[in-house]
Image (cartoon, rainbow, N blue to C red; front, top):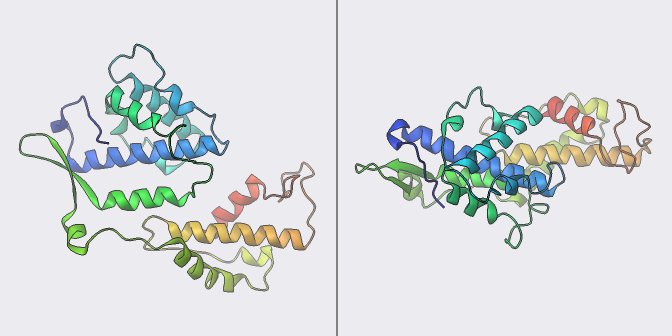
Length: 248
């Protein structure tokens, strides 16, 4: 569904329009996944479109406030408004945002609690194959990039290929090691793209650490900051963060 902007499109370069649309889509999907996984309060996005007599673009203003809170909470590049100076100036039509966000809730067809996080990367790569172009009549048109039309589409590695490569690279490096020895492993993907390989490597590391602690009967949480397992035997948030920052 296209985004309708109330501001004159002449105020934006094509690159800025493409950036703004992609960022808005990614942020909405990220927050919706976080809702269904209990990280964000359920219906947070829906509350942004709950005004019964909405003023023009009030839904986006509500949504942008949610983005700003996410910036404070996650400290993530996805919500970095020091670098992104465009999103704060957008005015997206109420009906457009309402249609998009409404479809993300029941009875919609999406179960975000079961949806793999790689969906963000897939959406990103699919979007890379499209471009929003301003025509000579000052209207907006979405079309495939010439290089994509030439090659027949955008392709990214399926999950089983990612899993196979990670198992035979990261898996080999971790053989016969302890978590302390594993801290020396540094994983980089110079051609990151959608990040599927890095996500796969990170998940492999999480599973490997959890299995190691279980096999070696590491004591679950005792209320200390150094605990690596929660009371129910899962990796603590601090341990996940340590692995992410240290190895990826």
